[in-house]
Image 1 (cartoon, rainbow, N blue to C red):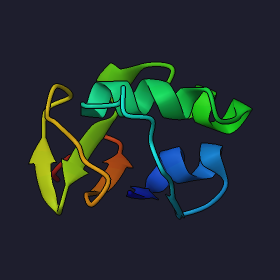
Image 2: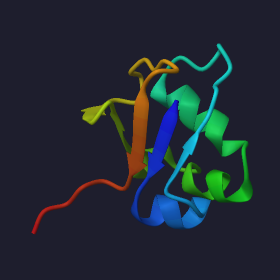
Image 3: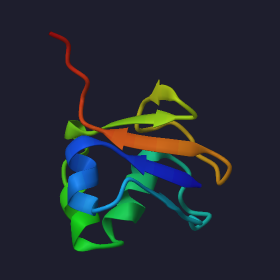
Image 4: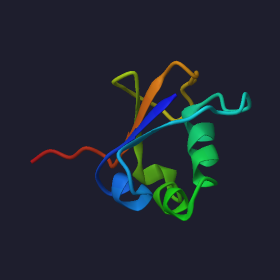
Length: 83
C-alpha cells in the first residue's frame, strides 16, 4: 500500500510518502491510522487525534470506516478549508 502525507501530517512524519505492507488485521482507514501510529514518534504525533485528519483512498475522500486493501493508495491530510 502506498501512503501519502500532506501539510503538517508530512511535517510530523518527516517524509511525503511510504510503501507499506499492512497486517491482515488492518481493514479500515481507522485501523490503518492506528497501525501507523505505532511506527514512530512522528506517526504517533500525526495520528494522535483522528478527528483532525482526513483521508482519501485512490484519490477520493473516504470515511474512517472505509475498507482498505494492499493495492490501495491512501492519503492523509488536514481538513480542507476554503477562502
